[in-house]
Image (cartoon, rainbow, N blue to C red; front, side, top):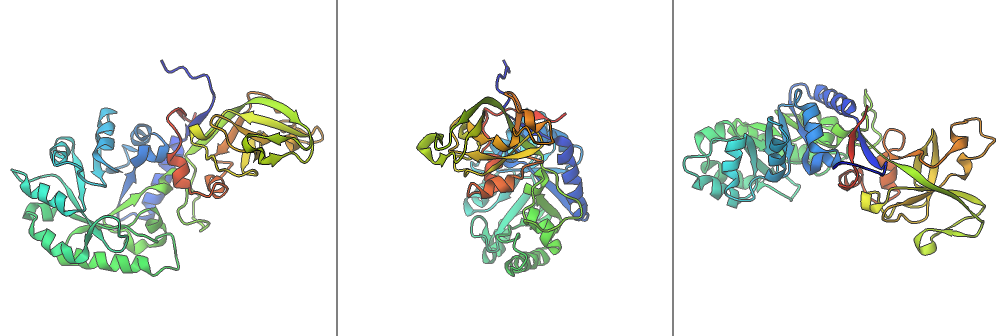
Length: 370
């Protein structure tokens, strides 16, 4: 039973998703643009996202093999790259059976690969640590790793690394990292992949054979305010409805902990969304929401299921906009999306847009924009 009483939902604009993909893909037209849909497509519903992009994308990327198998269960038959590689030796056989490409980053994975009989025939990516110091073989290890691969495996091999500061245009590190990887690429005549979203936009020499499009796919810029020739379109709109409206007197408090006090007689709208839905508990008073064409501030502490918003200035009968002078129970409130930047919410919550997207909980339905 899929009955939903609350109107709290994340509206997913698949047309915007496709437009973002096509725009970024065109910026790196000589590369294969991989759509990264790990973490349930950054909270957007991986199955819905993959179906919308399947005709445009040659290769999807996920974090681990469980996510890839879920795509297969949902009928997605595109090739899938497993970014964290095999967690078990048996993952190699699953990869062959399901057309998964495996990213190898550690000695134990190479040992599993070497132990396979007959030799593993699937596509292999080799993760090289050029300065991120998170996953990957050190540059000086690569010669030894290559000796453990078959000629056929090397022939299809993709060397991969990851930028640590690609969003920083004044950093010299991205080009240093890229130089380390390209020297190996030249030595072994392999394909390579370096660019994430920020790499695609900031460092065009890093595009290589494959780019890995993550955050920008979902309409958010990883490089701040840098202008793009075509604006990215936010794919997710998080929204909920007003479930109560009441007036508090000057001097009264709103919410847990009495952290916000009314300085005037204030009209408060209570909205059916909270930190159990993924809206950040530490969002500060003043964080904007969007109601009927106007901005209103969050006040008080975010609760598990509710937030409170000061709508006093939106209900002023002297306002010219009749839409906002008549706010009623049931009205829709946008928490982030096309009118409220998720970056603004993140800044007011001392976090980043990635975290907000991926923390939208499963009790928030993902619905397709119409």
